[in-house]
Length: 459
Image (tube, rainbow, N blue to C red; front, top):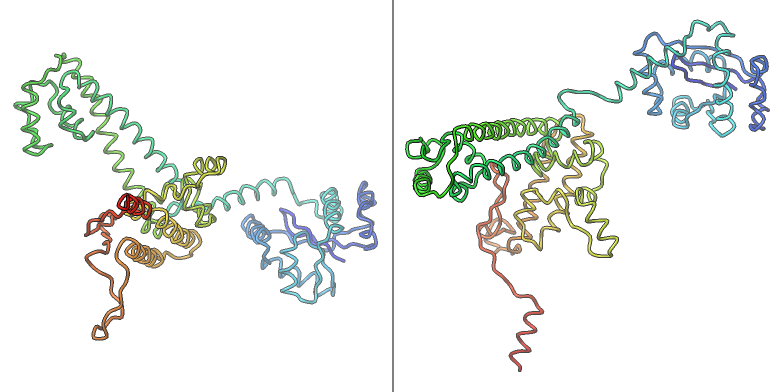
């Protein structure tokens, strides 16, 4: 029997002289306590040394995946088959299966007794290699070099398609939203002591900061060019409110600090727009099909919540549907109440445009298509946007069926067998990723309310 042992330096092929020792694996370690006894039981038959780190990395990755490397294939043909050995002990069952498929006449056992033999060989590996003239093999240095190379390979760094940067970017976007709210509230409270009526007229935080930065003291509103920021009607209202304002007077030093804070708010808004464009471009490179279905922000939050694109691809559709609502899910399970129907996917435009009673149903449909799309993005070798486009069409058609009128058969004179009413069906607008409805929803009474009215009528 031969034993195939993989080392960072190369493939070692040991020959077992007494196969009967494997019948008692619990006593096998006694034969390896001393190197002299170990040499009597096993001896180095052949050794294939890797030429460089690249070959070692290629062989190691193939072994991890349970595949047969080309160098191992040639080594087995030369050292095993040509010498007419029929049994080759291996440590990995997947590797044994691959070798068996390649060489049907070769048996590859990997039972517990073989595992014990591998542990014993590992204990005396350095002495066994040096005893057979392989003293130049530096296992420690080669192990360190191979570990570094394997770590870099597992990272699979790609500047064009990496989800770690996307996770950090969407987290930063959420932090910027919090900072914008805090800073904008501080600007309104601070400047509100001087001009409190302005808050009621201008609700947008960015516009408010620009107006305060432009004007400063309240008396400058009459001559300030407000039309460059506001509409003419709004600018007239602001000027009238400034002329009769009941705010307190402030100094130039106070205005200077308020303007500095407004500059920071405007800079954060501008950087947020740049970050939003960056996230959109990253989503186009990483998960284009998922972006088509749920948008760049919702898709990026799903990836960030799952940890990576590959982790999200491993989730089933039911998990994608409630991803982000874990607290509500466990609270419902603990209190034995109804579980949540949606999580982060609720913020998708298609789900938002559905009626409340159909949001759960549409979330399930959208989660099914999103799970398929993200698997194509994560595991597909080439960029293919057809999956996302077809899934979007199917979800939109399903939304039309749920929200619109039912399909009705047409007369034989018409060409198509079925038609969907264009007056009641929702439209999908690709420009703003929103579903617009051309009809007004009619309120209907429930069956319980009808029964109550019938009872009242009888009374």
